[in-house]
Image (cartoon, rainbow, N blue to C red):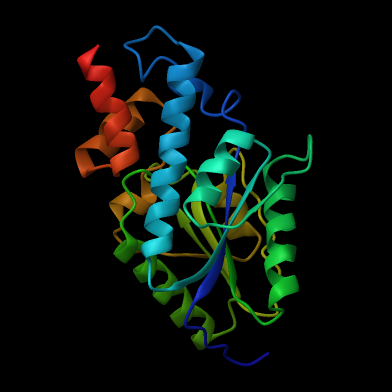
Amino acid sequence: MGPIRIDTVDLVVPVKPLAAAKSRLRGAADHGVGDPEAHARLALALALDTVAAARAARRVRRLLVITSDPRVAAEVAAAGVPVAPDMPGGGLNPALERGEQLLRDNDPSAAVGALQADLPALRPAELDAAIEMAAAVFAAGPMRRAYCADADGEGTTLLVCAPGSALEPRFGTGSAEHHERSGAYPLPGDWPGLRRDVDTGEDLRRATGLGVGSHTRGVLTSCARH
């Protein structure tokens, strides 16, 4: 297969049910109390800021959120983003494969990617730069998949595949290594917001230091007042 040129990517963003999402962040939105509603507001805010940044990226043509949470679905749909239901008990990688298939059903020639939903400090320009670098990798050949590792170098925040290639998501523990071993190219750019996923209170503090989006900022501001 020769070089492939892409200008834009269609992205899948998977969002877990809020009650089950980000368990290690519980208490971060209410001074350690761990109120379920406060936690749900924070988990939702992280996702909404991620989606907002992705929508603003020039290199993202279409965005699809996969979720089985009705609250997430309503908020995302209200923002004008298409939503598809997750399959019960399917897990993250099957959800991404489902999203990939739905996007490719609409346009079989699309370049498709997966973006994690916990990137509240993501900047649209960072996402554009990562997609542009992936496009350069695909154009040079023969690599057909590329990924961005998280700040710790162990997880994956973004995975992109070229038209005609499968996404082959391998998210989970040690996903960066799994993606590289499966043939994906590790994107080396300096994108602090794209690499700063939020799993713990320390991650959230570091993301806040970079500057988080309005939804997460609003939740944290409300927390500080109480």
